[in-house]
Image (cartoon, rainbow, N blue to C red):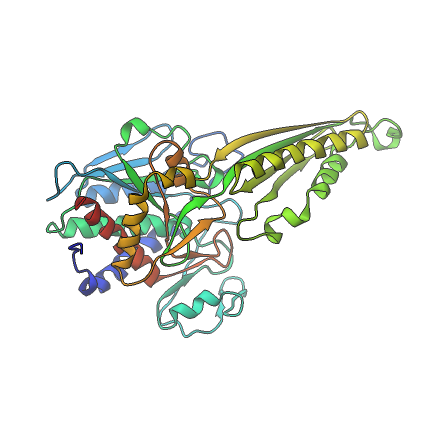
Length: 423
C-alpha cells in the first residue's frame, strides 16, 4: 500500500482555498472567439493568464514559461524527496470559456448548506431543478456554486484551474510531501479547438499528463470522440428579387436545404452512449454566398469518415437541386480518440485510479462525448486522460459545481504527485 500524506485534517483549508480561487477566476471574462484567427482568439484570456503567473510567483514557483505565441503557461515545480529518476507529470486545464453562451459579467451564486430543493437563479428567474438535475441530490448540506442565470459559470474549466492551483499551493505549504518533477499547464482557446495549436512542446518535459476538465465527481475518461470540423460553402447568383425568375440561385435556401437533409437521428439531441453525430453550429448566409459549420463526432474513425462522405453526398444533392449553384465541403481533423494510445500506457490510468480511491471513493470510468486538450496532447505523444473537475451542465446558464467535488479533485492531484514519485 502506498504511503500518502493524510489530508483529511486539512479539509477546511482545501475548501477555503479552492473556493476563493474559483470565485476569483470565474469573474474574469475569458470567452474564446471561433471567428478570430488570433492566438489567443480573445485578448481578455490573457488577463487570467497574467493572474495565474502572478499567483505562481507568490507561491514561490519561479520556473514559469509564458508562451508569446499562444498565451499558454507552463510552470515547473522541481522534485522534492523523490527518486532522481522520477518522470515529470503534468496537470493541465484551460482558461477560456465556451462561446456557446454568454461568459461576460459572471456573477456566481454560492449556496452554503444546500437544502436539497430547487435553486432559483437570481439574475434571470430560471430554476435549477432537482427533477431535471438529479446530481444535486448528492450535495445536500454542502456548498454549491451556480450561475445567476444570465451567463455560464465557467467551471469548464476554471474549476480545473482552481483545483490545480490549490494542489500546487498545498504542496508548497507541505515540504514534507515527496513528489517528482511536476508541470502545471494552462492553455488558451480549448473551447474553439485550438488549445494545442502551436503548443510549445519543446518547453514541456511532461512524460504523462492529466487534464482536469471532466464532469461528475470521481469520473475519469480515457476515451473520447474523434472530432472533425466541416466547413460547407455555398455559392449562388445574386440579383434583384424583382428580376430573379430563372436567374437567382439563393445560397440561403441552399444552406437551409442542406441542414434539413442532415439525419435528425444522428444529431446531438437524439444520441447518447457510443453513438456519434452531426452538429451544425453556425450559419452565415446572404444572396451570393453562405457558410455552414458542422461538427462531426464519433468514437470510431470509420464512422467519422462515413459522415464526411454523407456531407459530400448531401452537397451534390443540393447542387443538383439548385442549378447554377455550387457547394463545397472541407473537413479538418480536430482531435482523435485517445483510446488506442492509452491502451499502450496502462500505468497512467492505474495511477489515477489509485489516486481517486485514496480520497475515499470509487472512480467511475467513462468515455467522454467530446474532447479536451488532453486528447490533442495524447496524439502529440504525452498520454493524458481526463479527470473530473466536478462541473455540471457545462456551456449553459444552468452550469454548477459542488465544493466537495473540487476539494476531491485537488486532493487527487496531490495524490498523483506522490504516487508517481514512488514508481
